[in-house]
Image (tube, rainbow, N blue to C red; front, side):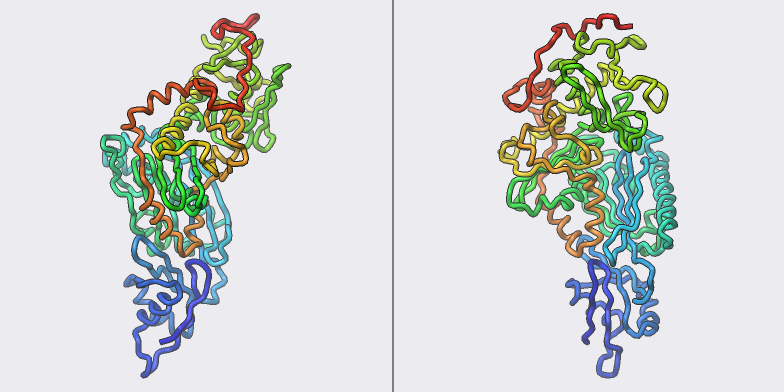
Length: 531
């Protein structure tokens, strides 16, 4: 039968010999055979609407067509047959549906380039800022419908805007990939997440087949295929599988660890031979959900803090050098580490008033550390840190370290054996490992072992749209990942209590961290001259 197909990724231009009395194979079979040979694939599936239009398209374009294919759990699917001379991009859309923020990238599938990207707040936040609130809200049919509707309407609005900015129609998006934690994946699919938070913590689905955009409510061509990264547990979702795929951890001979800090801390440890993963709540204080001046990274948000340990002068850096209006997770960790190094908080994360001086003031019945005075802020009010804020951070940092310690112990390895330590997520894109180690949030390893990945979830979602091996590799990653359920780990709380000190109750674990001498032993006493 002959025929040849060329092209990168999932877009192939196919040249077929025209049918004749000596070559009377059906049109659909002729095209499928050429694609099977080029990909390669055991079979190529086509839906009836595409087959109906195929005879006319093949003859109109003289048996030379551009094909968009994709592979799901088991099958390879032909998604579109296009004019090979059409100059418009063959587009794909990658989504990272975070609890707080959604990232969207529009890409050219054929050129394998980025067309445009955008980030925006998850609209479900108006129902509840955290996953638990949304899961409880979704236990009624009306609540689940509302959460799904909010998400789909917002996605469609931004998709339309993104396409308009690029000068293309939404029906030119032929493939979509979606990464999200297990709860966000359920709400995207309109699945009830009730059992994610009740023993034995069972998702409705882990391996998700290729879906039609039209069945999901996405305002794209109804035949557009949607790939959703798989889950493995109630707290370990597709966003981390996307991150693993993006990092390449699953292909390394040496031991590596990936941590993605968002609403939860999701961690995976392993090599090309094995992977072990777990997840737990360690991120709320870092995402702005607890700290009063906290907010996601953006213009005017403080992302770095330095304190002169002798003069105790405080300096801040904001994103875009705008007047400060809040602080993000990396800035908060910097601030706490700097306060500790300057002797302004003790090993329990409590204020040392004599060292804080006039920056520690009483407002509304509680002591607050004035990071930026009102005259220097964007909003005209003091940016302050309270003891409650510090206590929340101490719990988050202790949870983070305990999750890492529990996972490495379960795998029978030590921190020192880790050759590469990947830090991902929006928080991880700007974290200073030195500050995180000072607090005892990350293990005290040589600094060159730490690698900042940025948003690895959206990176993996894009990569799976470009790579013919992508979906198969993600499936293989999932199949060889062992999930450790922290909710039933008997030693977790004991380790957590030991980690609620700076850097830890066992300071020998952090040899590079200097414990400052306290200039004042009474952290609870009010500062002199405080008003």
